[in-house]
Length: 195
Image (cartoon, rainbow, N blue to C red; front, top):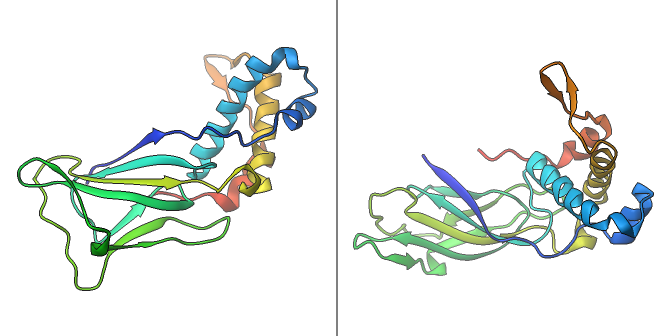
């Protein structure tokens, strides 16, 4: 089964405050443009590693067919905007929310949100084509203050590594990645693996 996840609307909020970043790096405002790019890289690295959205963003999950339980990657799930499908005529159609239930786990280390059929309901008939099911939803912690401190600390540690090691470190033909066991330890409890 083919599953595709796309970011429709990225978050426009920063996880880290400018003052805490400059203090952590012992840097000046003069380097803020570089630091901003490094912050984006650190955030992307943390999100990718733990499989979570740090701040609210709109995502679209595309599936080839209906599943008994639609698992929504990049927790924490905030809300489901729409469940759509391509009908026999080739038209993208929205499924009534009365057909399904949205299960939203809670807590900072909560797992995946899920969509299941409501009692006595069935999914509409799909056109047989790739990515015929489309689920649009919002995922991420409520705001920067809601992002767990361990994730912010991991971002700051990565940011420090990126800032200090701006050029690739070469050992023979291989590029050596900066290894940071503290980052691994901080992120371990937040890791989720999309099945």
